[in-house]
Image (cartoon, rainbow, N blue to C red; front, side):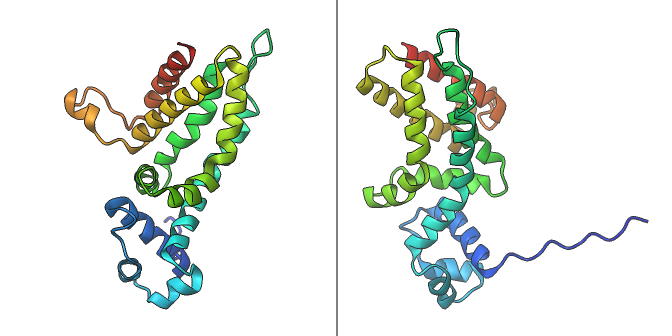
Length: 212
């Protein structure tokens, strides 16, 4: 007879608020969700939110920081390990893999579906929110990516590199969100939620665009 399973510990009030807010923000958008809606769904009172966070904006910043920190950290680790060719230039596909893989992998983490939808929604928030959330989370790793990308493509003008990075970001966020459009128009022949397939094709597509 197998020993009884140890019950999973219940999430703390703070974690319950974060998990609930993430789900609601992803489903409805940030502006459409009130603190009272979060507290009602989490089964806590409004004082708990003010005690742990202070405001809805701080709830958003904290939950995004928890999710984004492992992505940014893994990016920097992978960027430090990229292969270099005989001329000492970073291998472009390795650089792209280092940047894209941690973001796509986030979909497979517990609660990842809500996070990637939230990440997509934040792209359309006002500049103050984008700077407070995305800037704090990803500016350092994005700048390191651009620094190494410039080494991999030394003949590409800086402004052109920035534009092409902008397009790579767009493809990444859309792929992370997996809206199902490609599945619909191919009658299911393509599964954009397949992380390995999506990553492989996105790296090849981005490399071709950056080299063009």
